[in-house]
Length: 148
Image (cartoon, rainbow, N blue to C red; front, side, top):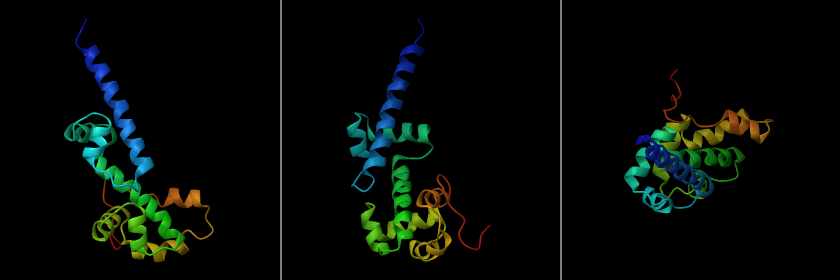
């Protein structure tokens, strides 16, 4: 027997645990989550979880969490009945500055500008289509207005 069989079994076990972490982030994005708590939940060290998550999904657990939060924030901002500050706290961010910075990096415009522009841009679109066409760019920064 070769030693690759235990390695393959370990890899499958790690992938299953990474999927549980991703599913937890998807479910609990509005809750306070940090890498240490996520790692404890699947009996991994924070460093190992971060490295393996990035290998499997192309971004860090924190980056994935922030993308989920920004996606939800975009939907709430399109609704137009909450302020940017209310949206920030509703999606689980505790810092308006960090939220605004990350939102701008992913979407290309600040949340206040997005809120103003999105009402007319998605008017008449079913919400499921609006969500798909306005999904934030993941793993790279969005071009800012004026850039191509």
